Amino acid sequence: MRKFILLFFAVLFLVACTQQTPEGEELAGTCPPDCSGGSSSIVTTVNSPQDEGNVYVGDRLAVSANLEDRGESNAEGLVCITGLDGSIFSGLGGCNCESFYISIDDTDDANFEKTRVDFSPSFVSEDASGSHHMTMYTRYLYTAYGPFTLCLTGDPYNEKECSVEGNKVTGSSSGPLKIISISEELTNIGGNAVNLRLRIEAEANLDDTAQLVELDETSDSICLLTNTDQKTSADVSVILFGESNDCGKITFDQGEDTATITCKIENVDTDRFIGGQKEYDGWIRIDYGYQEIQSVAFDVVSE
Image (tube, rainbow, N blue to C red; front, side, top):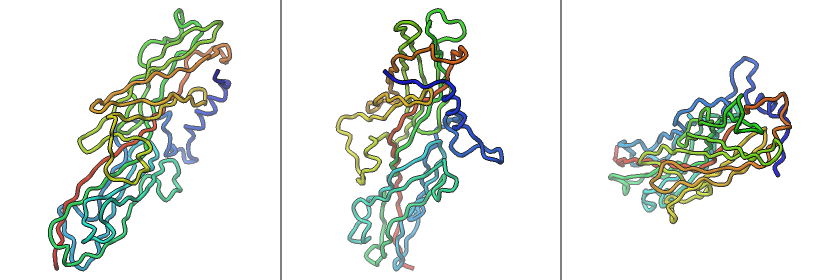
């Protein structure tokens, strides 16, 4: 049996999530419950080497990238590079990875909203003259939020003040994975207690250079990932009354951009609600791994 706290704590919890700065401006991390939506997340810009640019003999090749979080989730992961010949660019051959994180909650953090990733520079000798190619992988842990409003009642079949029917999602956070549908089902289990089932549907908006990855792969310092079972999973939880309920994993089959999961929350005692309220807010949280790939071609030339 899950333990539910009183409604007044839930109100305090939601107020804490939407507090404002003294100047009246919203804090950076207001999602949830105030999610603006969209598909933006981490935008990676390769600084060096420039695509279709020149690198000069006698200089040092200093591979670097700027990362900007334009979505609504903190991010933590790796930037990896491959494709460079280690016999020519010393220290940059094979697969090289550097970790990063970006915060959207703490304005005092040095990595608030953006960061920079640098790799150890390599001296460019005359032997490097010619055309070269480098691939950069930006792989990270991200979170999708889906705020909802539920109708919670001990008499779901005859309730007049609200309805258990319809899509309960009221928004979704910005990112490549979105929560597009939440449906609820209440089962009366005696008295005014009910079991709550939420059917959650998520959608991944991916282009040809992006993919979902397993959560543990976001910290795995390898360049080429091998998906042997042709499936990718993400962790799902439901936050209701200020309490997080673990729902297990939602699984995307390869080639499919949508997936569903049903989360069961047992023994919700509607008699404990204060003031006869029937509608309650909460949100779905999906933690997932994501990867984007960029390619850079450049020439090594003499002065």
